[in-house]
Length: 330
Image (cartoon, rainbow, N blue to C red; front, side, top):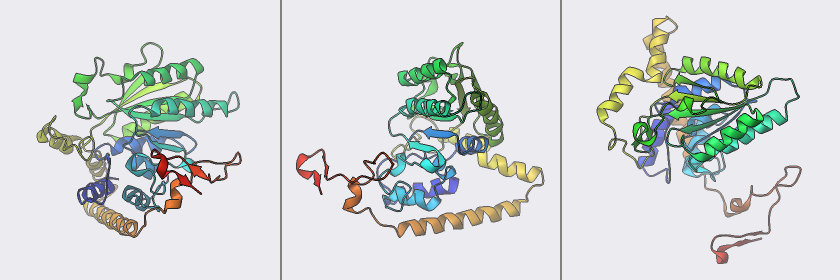
């Protein structure tokens, strides 16, 4: 994950990736720990900072790169870009470009899980992830309210990286203990989001709680992003380089795991360096393969829009474009 995101940074600065691009380096323990605790029957929807979750949910590194380049070999065939990765096969529903918009959809995924599970059986759960910058939105409370009323197995997961774009949580939230936002009706817990083992163990408990019919829960992951909000944000106008460097030195989630492996004699420093070298080679090979891709053809513009009742694609003879004169006619 880290190597892939660092490579995305390099490719963006080389202007090979265009448009919006939000990187996840620093927060890897959150997604990795959640994925270790869930099953592929559980639905997952998140914000636009979604490259690494797509990787966990069935996409390859090459597909991630190709999607960011806008190539048809990408995870969503070059149509989604950085903010819109999906894998229906692995119950990953994106990738939402609108801040907070994934929360109501996540509640809907929870409704589907409950609706399709026979009474008395444990349910798959749905997790809807959003950041501290979205945590005070009304649509999130509306989704949580319905989830509680209907007893839906939904996890409202707040990735608190302490800055909503460039605004710190102390300036944006009168209550920055986000796990308490359910008040006296919806329980919540806070997890160290820089510790992958803490996330895994905490989410195993959360999954069992929701799956057993106890309704929704708030989970706050205390984490940190190293890059700015997006590639257009240097990330140093509202926080100091010393702050970022301090987190890297004392809380980095990958360095924590490396140290743990060495201290417990699961691996030597040389073995870890060898693994890191293999990862760099693997990611570089994936990048090279992705760059051999191609852009979608004009016909792809109007594919994947409509389907028949049996889920087969139905090509439309006319697609209305914003400029009427550029509308597509078969």
